[in-house]
Image (cartoon, rainbow, N blue to C red):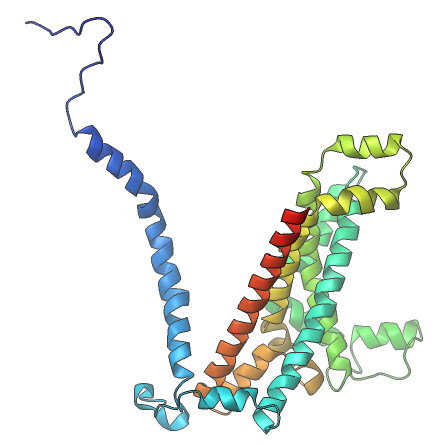
Length: 322
């Protein structure tokens, strides 16, 4: 049996089997094939319902057309005109709900970020019991939202709740037993629960960001005689800017879109805690005007997209100037 030997310096003979160009095409197509299930799921779960909702917002879809919603009469932009008309009852209530949601979001995002970054900085240096304390801080974030909010609902009860027992009976900071789930105090109730649930995520994110800051910078600052506050302002905050940029955006989107807290906490949210997600839900499933509710949802989506793109654009310009 003879065997062909390639001369020295020549390229080795191509192995038998599929040709190299076909193999290269398969290698290039493999990432797209791996992404295909995720793309199909995204299309079915998000894109298609979003497009259907946008189409429903153009219809006069009420309870009379629920069985065959495709036969609902076309209304064009009529639902949008009703929703943005601040002088009409629907538009006025929607604007109030939007402002309430904006106020709740601002307080929750600010407090969650502040508590998270303070806790992360204080627990940056190792000490005995740090791991247990970090685990304890993450408990509110790990608890199921239904369990957590139901527990807080019992704590906010007027006569038997722990909040009134602590503030009124023990600390004497409140007169009598105020209602926390009615009236203007419902705003504070929503904020307290949302901050309690959100700040561990901020703490976890900032803690991860602090791990990427070189320790040599803190050592150099200590040698230069910089105090803790100055080190925080001049070293920690600037190097955490990319983390904080993403963190604030995520906290804003989560809080502004939050439906679970207000829905579980109140049977019917009062005006002071009328989150816009609950307002849109009531406009759709309580009044059975799905066309108007869809229009409100599309307006909310557009608002969040504008805020997100504007926020990212401003952050990108600042990074370029820096």
